[in-house]
Image 1: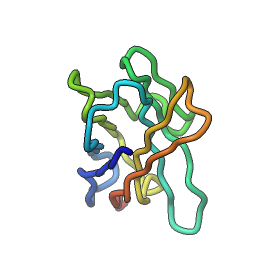
Image 2: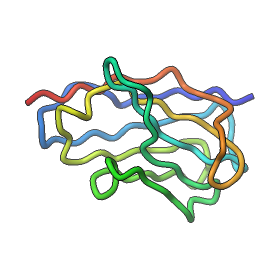
Image 3: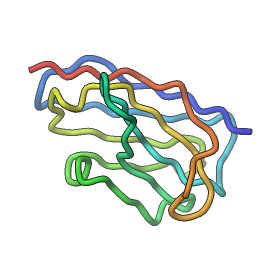
Image 4: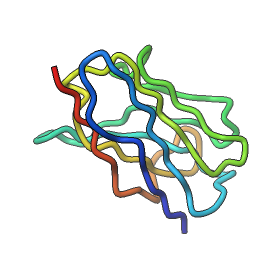
Length: 119
């Protein structure tokens, strides 16, 4: 069992940046960590994932070039650095832990953090 807690969300103007954190209740050396978002009235979409050793990442086209995923050496926290934010980036952002690479499914989810980007 892994409990995940997201933080770092908030309100920002277009062009601004935010750094989201995903803190785990224990180390997760065997899990990949993914970031997802759900915009109002839309389905949840994948943004980025990082492998347990931090040496491999994958991004959705919508995140490529603007977002960067990373994790700390202690393998307890993952991050999503988001730059050049636009109003369409507004939504609830979730982190999740999954096994395998890339994960076929994610077993544990956080409750999400709200990101609001105003024009």
